[in-house]
Length: 484
Ligand code: URP
Ligand code: ZN
Ligand code: ZN
Image 1: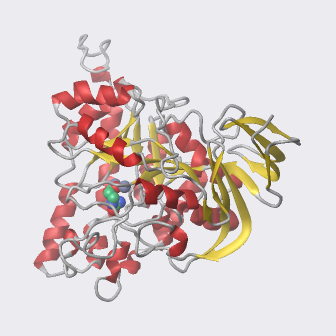
Image 2 (image 1 turned 60 degrees about the vertical axis):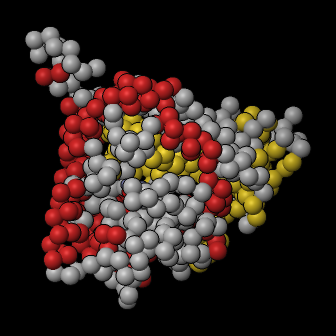
Image 3 (image 1 turned 90 degrees about the vertical axis):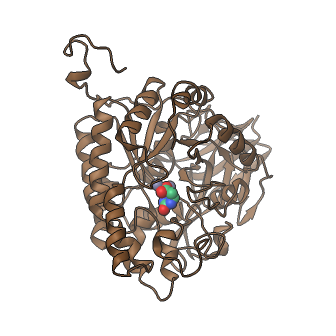
């Protein structure tokens, strides 16, 4: 009756923990019960946790940056690394650069993504919101289940300006999609760059100085206001500051249609990690930058108290060589060094060890932050839960084993990991995607290309009251119908 039965484990969901078995048939969870007999294959999960497979909601895979640098991981190596890290699916970004058609860009990524070993969808980055994009291409993307768009408030070649962002927020809202935003004030960063360059301060450590906490806080505040004006859902990616997190918390309390994430690097690293001899610090350069210990403590409190839906990796793998970080030369000033660090395989082990094992979060919070909330926010209606009828996307986790993080364990295409040497307790031993065991005891069992595109539903706004600006309400603006 069942293809596979996982038995004797401790099943953990975003709400419960119980001793139970899971029966899998045709790639779906067919039964969850105290005891299930039979099964063509029986997997003994005794002493292990059985949880929804991780959903990595923020990863840059086979993506060119605005400077034209390709990530080191393609959909094969990126998905393999994700699988070894306990993920059964992921949502990397598709990047539209200026002048490109969204249809063409999506066709390119469809080819690239065919190699994925885990299920995938895309968030669509918009850097050129032409009339055709807004009225024709975005609705078409939405029609095929791409229900999240991302915009930038920083980087000269990516940022849309407030007007462009309002346009995207409005179109996304009309189609039930959510807009994600990289929130940093571009002009503050450029001003800092000019001041630092004038003094010859261009070593990697100054990257952390060039992007002030205030640049993130100002941009988060503005992004929330822009979304509030048009009452559109908004997701703030990679929140790195206590002030930014507090703004998210406050807006959520006021009922905003707001979601947010932070990332392990903001919990694990500080700007001192950039202060290394030569250009070694470039390994720890990402935007927004890593901050300080006080920020780490504050971000953990926000994780504990529900400010963040997810902890995502922001896996942005640029190798420590001329193909990645140093396309502008090994002695390039920090503004010409590629931003981003790998972490797709380390995300869940880090969150489990520093979160659950250290007593900062519950097992239920771990499941919510690693899988369930991403499924709900991004409309993966068959994932993130262990209910009958859901995709059999499951991770069997050994909570006792302690490992030292090594590059080899990341299984990516990188030449370093910023988490190297950390001692983490808890290991994903078996990873299952739609009923197929893809990783088991350190071995990859997945076939290249076995991952499937997931057409996603609309963002779930249950419980988010939102806000009606008087000036956009026809009952109060002399009947002007100017926004949905
Ligand atoms: O530094 C980072 N995070 N690079 C990736 C691109 C982005 O900003 O999301
Ligand atoms: Zn970003
Ligand atoms: Zn990113």
